[in-house]
Image (cartoon, rainbow, N blue to C red; front, side):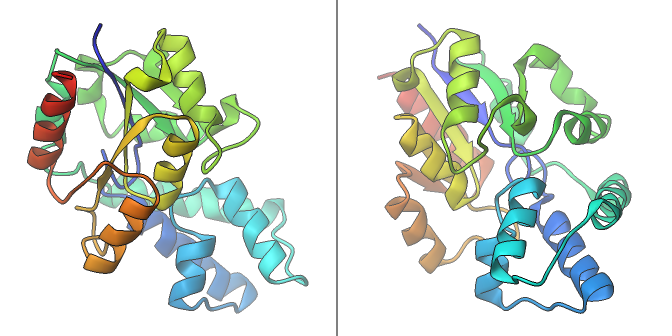
Length: 226
């Protein structure tokens, strides 16, 4: 039986995680006069869905209320910045061309958010259908909980042991580990390829840490043979 590759989208297929973090930092400063430290940025914004970003920020700053108006500004800014600046990770399509494995996407974006992102990435339709896209609003709990990855596996008909998650954030890796799936950490997006972050990825459960899609492809080939 083929292995199922479960792709995260932002920071793995698209070099976009940095864009969404920038939107939140800019909007928080402009609308609420809040600046985050580097540790706060990593803990409150990186690698999670907007809903969880909102919840973590409101918990971190008890007087902070991020209402519907604020969230609409986030959505509008993300769409504007993404439409203008979002680009695919170099070499990602070459990995998706591998027919020895099956492919799907499990993203922290909502269905609506993912839909407009995919208008920028029409080429993915050569390798997956819309039934291969799993979004955070399809489950009760997003990453780092395992729900989204387990839904993808169940829907596609794969046991967790036959799934390989490719993610850039520690929450992707923690969710894969909780789902009892193998995971590959991709650190090729801007700012991730550091020795400290690589160690954190291994601690979070990654079986390999790759800085290029060529390395990801080789790792998948090795795992597909097992």
